[in-house]
Structures are given as C-alpha cells and as structure tokens.
Image 1 (spheres, rainbow, N blue to C red):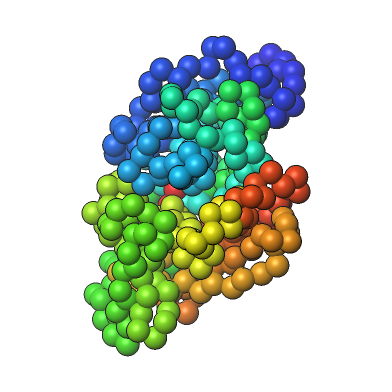
Image 2 (image 1 turned 30 degrees about the vertical axis):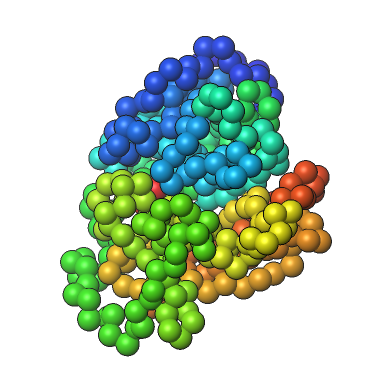
Length: 346
C-alpha cells in the first residue's frame, strides 16, 4: 500500500467522493433503502477513510428544527452506517456477523454548517479506524473517530466503538447463561403502566414518534414500538442503541425546553452514550435523569440519563444542551470515551 499524506481532519473534500446514490442497504444493516445515508467511501491512509453521506432535507423522524438545523441524531446514525460499511467493504468482516456497540459520542462545533438549504446536505466524514480487542475470525473489535464536514466546513466530531461477532458468540454474549428464549412477560408485574407523552411535549411531530412515557408514580419510561419503521427498521432481539438515545433526547427536551422563550430554547450540542448491557424488548426501562453543571457554558445544561432495567443500568446518556443564543460559544465539550460496555446493537 502506498503512502497517504495528511492527518485526520485536514483533508479537503475529494472530488472523486460521490454523493449520487446510497450504497447497498445490506452493507449498512438497513432494511429500507430510504434509511441509507452513506453514498461512497475512499481509503486515503492505512487506517483512514473519507466517507460520503447525504442527509435529506426532511425526514419522518430526523427532521430539521424550526431554524432549519439538521437533527443532531443524524450524526450518530451516519457514523454507525459508516463503521458498518467500512467493516464490510474494506476491513474483511463477514456480512453474517452481529455488530454490538459499547459507546458512541458526538460534539457539534458549528451548528450553522448543518442548516438545510435548497438541496440535501453532502456530509463528509474523515474517519480514523482503530482495532480494539480484535480476535478474528469470530470477534472483531473496532472503533471509528470521525471529523465531520459539510461542503468543506468542519462542524462536528463523533466516534463509535463496536465489536462484530459470529452468531454463536453473539448468543453467548446476548444471554450470558440465560435461557436465550426471551421472557414471558411475568416480570411486568409490579411495574406501573406508563402513559405516552404527546409528541409536542418531547419535540416530535407525530404521535407515534414519542417514545417517552410517565407512570402515575412520576417515573419516566422508554416506550418501545416494534412497528416503528425508522427506530425498528428490521427485527431484533433487544432495544437498539438509537432507540435508547432517542428516548434520552426526548426526555432532555421535555425537561429543558421552554416554549415561551424562543431565545432560551434548549439545543442539543454534545452526547456521550455508554452501553454496558443489553436491554430486553419485553421489560420496562426506566429513565432516571440527573441535572449536572455544564462544561460548555454558564447557561448551558448537562443532563445525565440512566436507562435502568431490572435495577441494572443498560445505558447511560450524557448530553450537553445550550440555549439557542449560545450556539456560537467557543468552548469545546469533550466527553471521555474510555468506558467500554457491551450492550446495544448498531
């Protein structure tokens, strides 16, 4: 392999990186072609790639806000798709392997670059690939760290850690000595039913997009709808990372958003997700929120949300929110990515 000059984050948008059509849905683990954002990739170093993606001007779930800024969760989904695509196309990981995510993060540094115009956004990810705890051919451990740009304008940084395992090893990791046949629903006894919040209360447009519920006792719950065409694009045996993140985002909106003051509307700037365990589909997941001092700005808010099932934390989501008026704040939020769990499909 030849020499590849330059460092991650310094590459200009390569004219040969194409944005003409999505890659095969099979290569990003999607059932619907409409949910594929990756369009192309180029290897520009031994462990460095440029990945192209097109973000839609509108989307059923990940749509721009009232000011036209792209939904920040598109960052997480795009990085997820980029990792899976590179794994299959460039890194020799078989299509039959299961991908299990342990942690992911993003930090938006320039919201203005993510404003949707008259055409879809062409997004470039400058990706550094790393092997972690790699034991092929049954287990591949990997991480991607990406510098995200739109039209050559750097606007975010993001990362994701994953292990890809064969079916036998996946079953062992998934059930860890349990029956492996799911649960019969008896564990629901003693848990209060939750009422789904209206879409407007959680920052969504459609009633079916609300995944946040509240019990009579005042507990927040993550509500799962297996028929949701985006959050459950294909069948699975546990709650995906993106569903948990969506629930945390909606709870953050519910707790921090103030409709009466447009300048004080809370905007999501940075996220860190750690997944130490799988979350079962048929058992309640409580969302426990803790407000912490912000590292970004005095008027910002840091919200830590623990997703708890059977008194075990299945995920922790830490979010930085800023009032819209502070989006240009220069301080960069950096979350630690040292914690590595083992619990959500990507």
